[in-house]
Length: 134
Image (cartoon, rainbow, N blue to C red):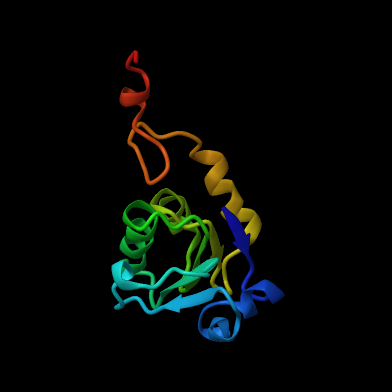
């Protein structure tokens, strides 16, 4: 997962900061239906977390990856905390703009701590399915 600091210039090109003016970038409000989004020409979708307790963007990312088959970048914006990042990646996010008080180095350690999971996620099958002979 690509981690972007809040003050990084890349953070200013996404989400509520102006993605609507960039070709191929869509800002999807967290109350919008991800299944009805027109994906033609879209290379990045920014999903917004208005506060860390609002998890609707997790569901949107999962729907975009699994049901819609979206292969482009899905970026988390807004109130993005370090402890949400591993779950974001497992739901289909490929980039995250961290909240201003979050440190990118600390965030990367989350991925170093949790390298494998028994359960499946948006990209991988569960270990018990992979272990069965074909």
